[in-house]
Image (cartoon, rainbow, N blue to C red; front, side, top):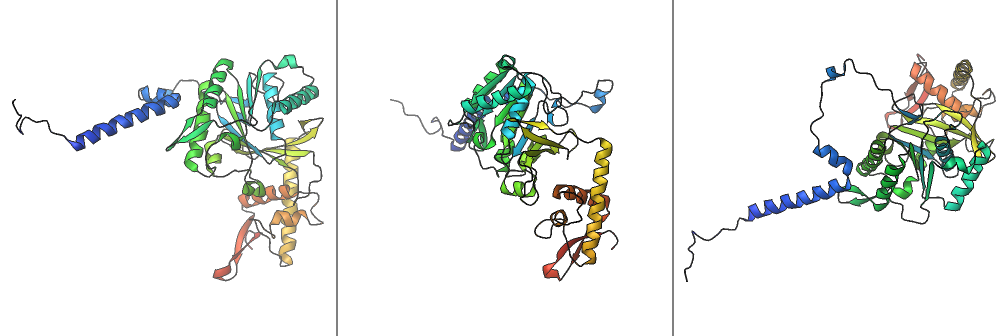
Length: 395
C-alpha cells in the first residue's frame, strides 16, 4: 500500500476553518433576523435610495397625514400616557369608536377607517361595558361597529417582542396582530398598555428604540396610526411631563399625549375634570391643552375660549405672576423655577392675590416670561451652597 508523503497530505488550516464557520454562523443569524424583521429584509434587498434634493423640483409637496390633526399623526406611533385611573383607556376607546364610525373624537374630525383595539389590562366584559357606555353617550348602535376589532389579552402573555441577544424579535402574538392588520387594513391600532407588551427594562435606551421601531414599522407597512398607552414614571407624574423610564420613549415617538387630573398641590376641586395635553409633536405645535369632563360614562371636551380670550387669559396670568414676584422680592422671599417648597407656581397659587390663576397657569406664565427674557434666574450664596431664584431682568 502506497503511503502519502508529507507533501501530498492535505493540511488543516485552523484559521481558515474558523473564518468559514464564523461566516456561516453570521449568515445563519442574519437570515433568521431578516426572517423576524421582514420590513428590514425588504430594505436589505433594495438598491440605494440616495437622491439629489434637486430632483424634488416640480414635484407636489406631500401633506402631513393625520388621524387627528395636530394630535395623532398617521403612519406613526403616538405614545399616550396617563396615571392609573385617569381614564386613558376610555379616551383611547372613544377614539377607536370615533374612527370606526367616522363620528369624530372630542369634537374633532378624524380619518375614518377600521380599528384594532388591543387591551392587556381589561377583560372582555369590561371592554363590552365601556363600549356600551360610549354607544349610549354618542347615540350609536352596535351595528355601527363592524369596523372595530377588539382583543382582550387580560391574563395572557401579551408580549409583542422578546429579547434575543442584542435585538428584540417579534412574538407569535405580534405576527397574529400583523396578519389581522393585513386583513383589516385599519386606520388605527391601539395597544393598551406598554408595561404588558414590552419585554425589557424601560430604561434600556437601545431596546426602547428597537421596540418603538417595531411598532413604527407596523405603522408604515400597514399605513395606519399606532397608539401605545403607557403609565408615567413617578418622576413623570410628579413633574407633570408624563414621561416613563428612559427619555428614549419620548425621543423615539413622533407624538406624545398626556392625560392628567386637574389639581393644585394634591387638591382636586372637581374629580371629573381632566386635561389632555400635547407633550411632543414633531409635525405640529407642542403645548396644546384640551379641557375634558367625565360625564355619563365618557369624556367630553369643554367649551374652549376664543383665541382672543386665550391671549387675554395668558396676559392676565403673566401680569399676576410679575405682581406676586415683585411682592415676594420686596419681602425678601425667594422663589425658584425648578420645584420643591419654594417653587414659584406653587407659592403663587396659594396666595390670596392669585386672581383665580391655577398652579399650571402660573407655570405656563413663568415659562413664557422666561422665554421672553422678562424674568431671569439669579444665584446667590457661597460657592458650596449656591441658591437659584427668580427675579425680574435687570435687577
